[in-house]
Length: 126
Image 1: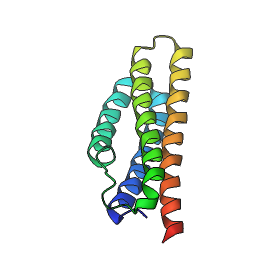
Image 2 (image 1 turned 60 degrees about the vertical axis):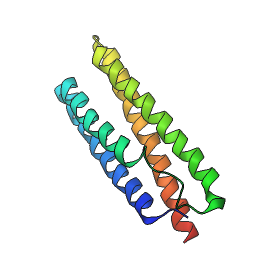
Image 3 (image 1 turned 180 degrees about the horizontal axis):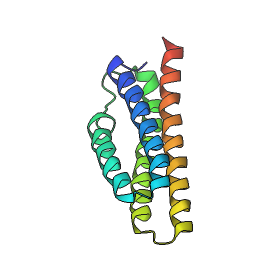
Image 4 (image 1 turned 180 degrees about the vertical axis):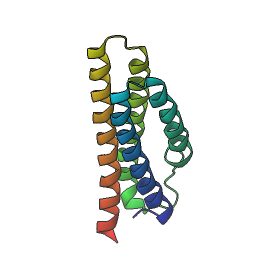
């Protein structure tokens, strides 16, 4: 079972991921790539402080391996999202930008689903 602080961090992260996803979709229409990079930088800072720094000290021993596995996937996907953002910034052709934006949105959905999975598992064990 996750401590309340972990659960809250994942819930807040889902909210921020959803807001960023909506921002990306709206910015796509405006073709405002610099705004996407700037918003992502804020999201990345929040992630590093609130998700990346979570530890397993207060987690039940039986649940630690599962939590570590999901946490590792969230970290991996977030690193790949960072790369996707960099590739988007360097894209010159419209088709490439669209492809990168689609990859970013897919990655955001995947990270969100991992966070939702952790929360759902935790709620099922309470």
